[in-house]
Length: 233
Image (cartoon, rainbow, N blue to C red; front, side):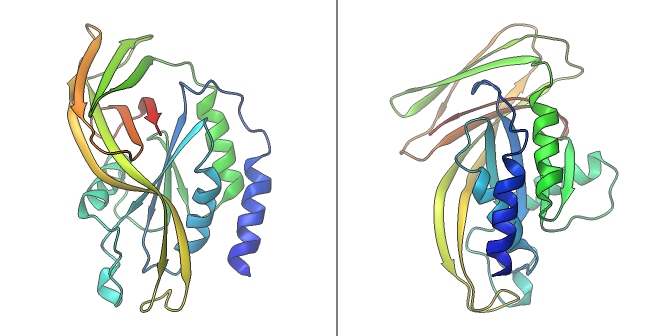
């Protein structure tokens, strides 16, 4: 009941001031979560409400550092914890935790705070785009094209990832024992495709077999701001 109430509150909050943003400039929301964390289901439910929005790319990055308490998160990946640590280092924070949401690589939100999340999404949606990004499928490859629209300090990293839109897990041990939870936009196969200095337009291709959604993110190197993101469902 508590999770349902939080989800309802999230729906209400996230529909207040929903930004009218073109689909080609979505805001990226990364949720660092774990099936072994008792505080995470509310944040998982909040991300679930974002999952189908076109103006947001909502990503669930399950971490592995809760596995020791008795339940191994089937979606956990140590690389996700590494990315979370990179954000912590960039912000000069000493520790990482779940649940944590990072909006557009810049705004850190602790837990499941729907109003804070809505405000952060709206704020970043109003930023002037500095990178234009377009992706398209070509058989089993993904074609990526980008160009500079404004000034950027430092080199940029080009990321690609896939995700599973929905999975249901019955958790039998650990802090969430006895709960059955539906997870949304579960990230897998995150990879760095290369770097780009922006001096000339970017044109590259990456293998993306299968029919799972693909996301490309261009981010200032060193866990900096996300400058552009695009998705193919």
